[in-house]
Image (tube, rainbow, N blue to C red; front, side, top):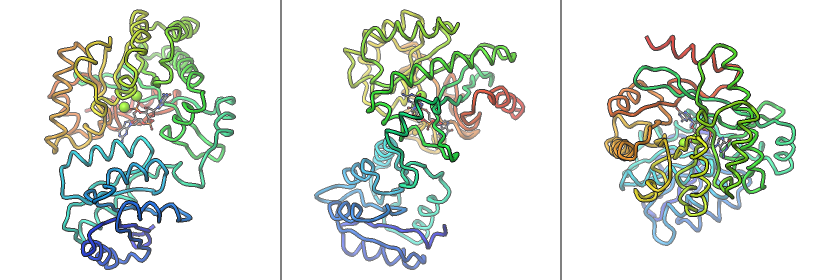
Length: 399
Ligand code: C2E
Ligand code: MG
Ligand code: MG
């Protein structure tokens, strides 16, 4: 799709600014333009469209309903394929918007500062084509609970594994298991779409058990293929932290499949731990006593205090990829990374940086004293049978 074919909605309260924006977009050859004078009008318009527009350009600073609230609704109701924010404000706001939108699978192209110009608009709109399309926001691949239940029953949801390298020497020491769902026609449904469905459909315990069993199975196969024992990280949802008996169940699964808990790290997102500290605490302590590692996932996107973090027996902290991507040229991100590393040192936690994509990011994190890297620079998540090759490829590209 060329730039001129994009359908764009501009939400801007200031009449003159709106006219100016639409004029600039039209000058770039765009003809499928929509406009709204505030968030309420924008939502009404979006809800009435047969298809979500490609890009919603939204002013953050609007009276009544501000841009952040507006984007929250758009993300929740899947009303757009992507959004870009127009703002002359604090760059930290963009991060908030990104985190909020990511949770619902909405793509955020970035921010454009006022005054708008043809160059700035071309740049932001061209990102629509270059960033990967998230399948699942599209009506054509909408999935329902029936499909999900069938996929779970037929083992059509399976793990991919993404390697983690030690900064000190580049050695692969662990992998993260990430759930994948491939439809019969080959298209993938992203976890951001199906994990919330699994949770609300009461199937999360079955999924976590399945991921644990598959991780044990692959761990044995890799050893048989001559790899050293790797640690495996498995994501656990807040819904899994239901009662203390969960710890016995996970331990039993591992024992049955011949893997020691010392090789398994359970990842819990920062926001889900903090949502129910008291109840989850006992379970987490029991898991730790049994030898499981415990990791705070997406660190920096929740609101945990030092006190809360120090009360939970975590062993690892994963810095969210939102802070890693672009950190070499963004002092604010670098500051968050430095503070996280400092905190981890004081609490004696090891630190994994998520989403390491470039050599510059690797160098910065290594220099700041981070322990492990995970990201596309090393490898994409791959099926179990391809892991030995992915490790070999990484080893061979390092020199
Ligand atoms: P997460 O646990 O934070 O996983 C990291 C996500 O970052 C993965 O997305 C991974 O593919 C992606 N990623 C890794 N390296 C890079 C990189 O260099 N650049 C970029 N842009 N992205 C990178 P994925 O697989 O789409 O998973 C999304 C989230 O879904 C996971 O975030 C996790 O919270 C959840 N999830 C995945 N599998 C499971 C599961 O089995 N159980 C539960 N409860 N949640 C899961
Ligand atoms: Mg994770
Ligand atoms: Mg994460």
